[in-house]
Every structure is written in C-alpha cells, then in structure tokens.
Amino acid sequence: STLLSLISLAIFLTTADGSSFTEPHAHQGVVTPFQPGDPKVKLDGKAIGILKQGKPYQTQVQSGGSGRGLVVQDIDAPPSIVWGRILDYDNYSNMVPKTVESKNYNIEDMKPTKKDPLSKIIYTRMKVGFPVLKLEFFIKHLYYPSLNSLTWTLDYSKSSDFNDSCGYWYVIEHPESEDRTRVYYSVEVSLFDWVPKFVVDFMSTKALTDATAWVKKYSEMEFAKQGGLKKQTSSSSDGGSSTSTNAKKGLFGGLFRNKKQEELERLERLRAEEEARRVAEEERIAKEEAAKKILRLTWLRLGLVSVISVLAVYDFHLWISG
Image (cartoon, rainbow, N blue to C red; front, side, top):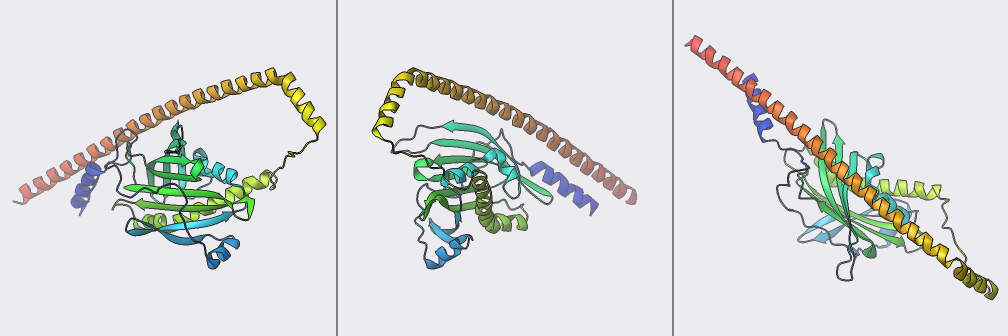
C-alpha cells in the first residue's frame, strides 16, 4: 500500500496544474455569461412579503434551456452606497464570507455609447478558503452603470481553480424610497471533479444568499455612519440671491476654472498612481507564481525520487527472494 500511495502522489504532482497568473485557462468559457439589464422578474405578493421582512427572496431565471438561481434583497441604503460595497473588491476579504484574498490587478475605463454602454472593466484576483483547501481564481467584471448592472466571467487569459464562473448584479432604487435599494443577484459556478463535495454544495446554494447578506449588512452600516438620511440641498432662491449668484460666477469664474484644472491634474495623478499599483501588483503576482512553480517542481522531484527508490528496493527484494 505504501508503494501505491507513493505512485499516486507522484501522479498527482505530475498532473496537478493549479491556478496561474501567467498561463491561460484551459478554455474560453463553458457556461453562458449573463447579459446586463433588467432580469424582468415578477415579484408577487408572497415575494414582497418576504422582502418586507428583510429576508432574501429566491427564485429562478431561465438561461438557455435551464434555470439559474436568483436572489432578490431589499437594502436600507441608497444605490450609490450599495454599489460602493459591491465594487470595493480590494476590501472583499474584510466583508465577504470565505474570501481570504481579493485584489484588483487591472482596471480599464471604457467610453460607453448607446450601442455599447460598457463603462468599466475590472480584473480581480480572488482566493476563497475552506478547511484544508484554498481556491484561487481570476475574474473579469463588466460594469454598466446606465443599465444598473454588473456582470462577470473568469478572466480566461489566466488559469483559475474554478472550471468556470459567471455572475450578475442588478441594482435599482427601491420603488418606495430613494434611500433604499433593491438588488438582484445570480451566479453560476462550474467546479473541477477534484473539488470536495462540501465546497460544491456551498458554491451552488449558500453562496447565493450569503452574497446579498453581506452587501445588505455593510451597505446599511455605511449608510448609518453617514447619518441614515439623505442630505437635501435647497434649490429655491429669490431674485436677489439669483442676481448675487450670477455676480459671484462672474467674479470668481477664473477661480472656478483654476479649481477645475487642479481637479483634472489630481485625477491624472490618481490614474498614474493606479497604473503604478497595477504594474507592481502584476510583478508581485508573477514572482509569487514563479515561487509556486519552483515549489511544485520540488515536490514532483521528491515524489519521483521516492517512487524510484521504493521500486528499486522492491526490485532488490524480488531478486533476493528469487
């Protein structure tokens, strides 16, 4: 049995690839990506009743010839704050259950058009942790503010520990209050055969409600920090104040232009800093990837040496016995 165990170890070390920042995924997608926009889910009286209790409502949406689980959740915070939590990928390890690492490695600002309203592409490296197992994967997020949507797939230019994954957020102002939000969330994950069943069960069931639960929790916490009430500014004024405002505009127009120039320069500096961080992150991940390969090769060599040694002893034993 020792011999068989060593042979099995050698085979595993030889065939296991693992995630890789520098190598492409085995395919370009096996699950159908979500499309941005309204999921057109009808909420009946029962669904509304569940949502009013602060609970998530679970239903299904059709995709191709099969159904996908979808969760609807009402949140006591405005959409701007909710989006702030969803898009805060660098902070996911502090908010999202099972997430042990999360870091953006590239952000592309797009020029949305009527034909293609895509505003931003966000590439994120994530790692989820379970007992005796951590899974690393690389996500390509597509952000459509004008469609109230965010969709994602794997970044297929990198190798992930998930076989495939895609998902969807749809975030709108609550129909009863501008200070509340209604979110729709769905995800589909395809895992490799070697992933333990308890991980498969979590990713296919509990992950759905966990996702809306953490967004609700941290959005409402942030809204409470900001006072919980939307600050209103008065838009009405009398004729005298209007004249005064126009005079101030003329008097301080140059100052405003200077402020605008300063703001543009500040944004340019931020973009440069973001680019520098992105390059540094890619270099760090590449170095980590190289270290992982060296470790994998070391274990492979040790496994093969062990197998060869045991086979030599076994062969010598057969020769003596003969």
